[in-house]
Length: 162
Image (tube, rainbow, N blue to C red; front, side, top):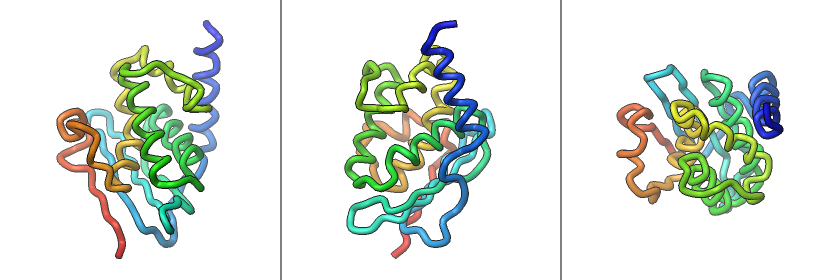
């Protein structure tokens, strides 16, 4: 096995065993849920956004190792940053996972998940939490988001508390 495959497997196993920011927030300002009925992955993302900063983020639900690891790493990548930065990294990660862009250092530890591209049927798993994040933040300017994510059920639900 290659070094990048070893790193990928190590990262996925570590984040599946001990997901970061897993659970529910007591109070949240933004929330969305992503579901993949084909495999049963079902992830909800809750955020506490204040003055355009993601003060806290949690995710909960059920999913395969790739889905949980990706959502866990996502929360680490966006927590404490601006909404705009979260949207940018979400778009970059999505572009890398779908082959529109090559992985680069911008992604930090997320680059280890680029190995998922070798398994096209698993790309949906890696992107599910990220789609929920985008919808929670109200980012509907992702091109044909509905057309490219039929696996997310009829509609990924998003709620913003007043």
